[in-house]
Figure 1: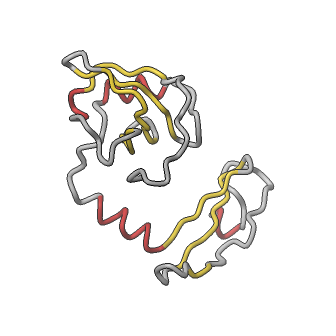
Figure 2: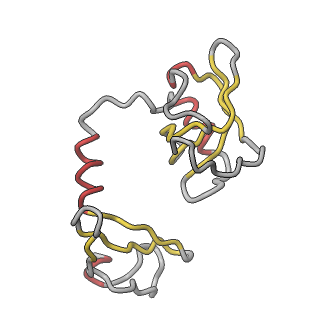
Figure 3: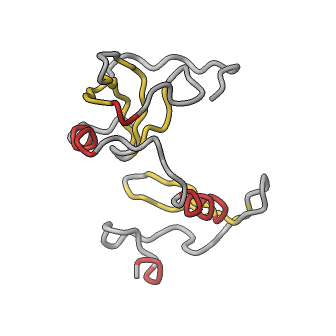
Length: 142
């Protein structure tokens, strides 16, 4: 309905910029759209990215936090749009800082590591990580 009305969801009267107008991603030839999220937030949604994400739903995901831990992350204030930077505590007492959790559910990355260096199912506690994020290293894996 909001696409047909050219409106931004839950922003009564705020009209979307160029609704339904796709651009071509020159890196892969896929269509992508600017999607206005409100509060001056915009994201890019590509046809290729959407297809890849849907295909990934069929694969097992070992990055999803246990439900009890997800509830704790939900109560935290977001540091960025949908992202929380936390310290996780594992069942053996090990603390891992610099863990980025998306939508209080998925461990997206751990600073300084190319992959998640722990089994997400072993997380027993989580708290906000207030340490300053390191400057990007141009030679880091990501």
